[in-house]
Image (cartoon, rainbow, N blue to C red):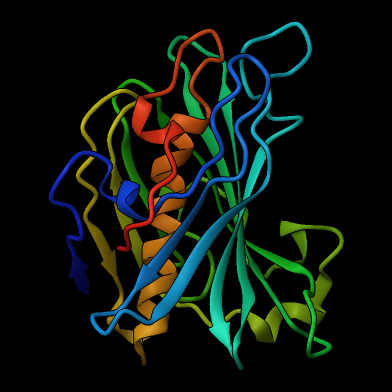
Length: 238
């Protein structure tokens, strides 16, 4: 696998994070990350397209109303959606970051098509963990990934067999370490080399890892303040 360690400081993605000033107890929105190659050209991005807001009468983002990111890659001078990540805060003996990621197909060409679920799981909010996409040897998710088999009819009643050919991933796809909320995050991203044929292929997984990492902050209880780094726009690049 290809291992990337883009971090040298707390929440390494912050250098390229753009955000509006956080409105306490109301919403967290407008966050975005752009990944650049060594020449400075943008090769991937993650954009928060659905705000993270507390459910009524609560101070947490609920599963019924998750926040969402689009993972984007450049295509013909514009950004093309590649994947969608949803995240929320699960209740339990210890709160967890619930998350769901799906690939966005372009079955008809030129537009955003249907989604193919790749993973749905949880990470401990206090301890963090590892975000992993592992499809096993058959293109189906392994038990460790805690999700319905991607690209299979039962993964979603809306997909059926028509999208089976669009599932291009086999075996280990990627893994990324995630620290618990409020902790210094030094993510390490691993990507299966069979899934990388160009810089953009690797970069979208780095952008996805950044979105998962920052979702830990976005799903922080609204009764608690965000770190100041997340409330000041940055012009730097990653």
